[in-house]
Amino acid sequence: MPLNPLQRVDPRDPAALPRALITLLALVLLWPGLVLTEFRPATLVDPRNLDTFGRFLAGFWPPELSAEFLALLGKATLETLAMATAGLALALLLAIPLSLLSSRALSVSALISGRPGRLASIARYPVRLLLILLRSIPEIVWALLFVRAVGLGPTAGVMAIAITYSGMLGKVYAEIYESVDQRPARALMQAGSSRLAAFFYGILPAAAKELTSYTLYRWECAVRASVIMGFVGAGGLGQMIDLSIRMFAGGEVVSILLTFLILVLAADQLSSLLRRRLA
Image (cartoon, rainbow, N blue to C red):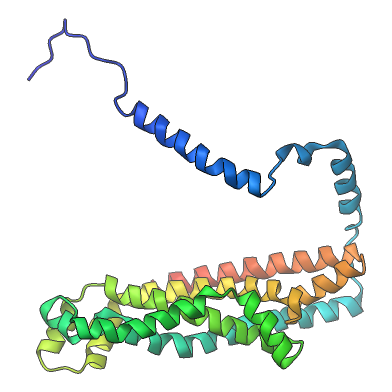
């Protein structure tokens, strides 16, 4: 119906009031959190704090570049990479079978009728509960526990990454299996194929790209986590940073931080390259 040129259009936005109420509610809910965390932005620009921070940063220059220190730095970098890679490899050994057991994609009733059976859902619940337990505890807490159990060194970091990341990978893998087109697997099952064959030929080809992308992303995260766990004695670059800070060796700290930055950038580039090759 054409508009009457003499008819006036209401310029008010009908959604303005709901948006304002939602914004007000968000601020009301956010305020107690800011109070509890003692968040005071004014302290960042306080002259005394700025002077202290400036003198602190001045101690980081120049970087430490002696041959002896660089040799130790190279060894710690290799330890960090090895810790992340070995931990992720062990996580995959646990995550893959757990993801297959917890995913509804391999349910016979779901593939044939489209809906998982009640008994199968109950049987998968303990596996999903185990995945929740594995990923609910941060890797740094596991590292702290394993340092007490096996002593200082990368072994504690490898085991911590393996446990936490197995829960993360297992959960996401199971969801990826369920998100792809189930019709090829359903057709194979109806033709008499086994569940594993239906998975390898009906689900895995469609999910391979997403699985690879997420695995590479988790490897990048494992590299970062390996550095953090070094602060509790798990070796690598993190332990070097902790020792240098304790000795007020600012030049060593900045050299380690620059190395870590280069390491993360290299891991990101390698991950991007592999994603493009597998696309």
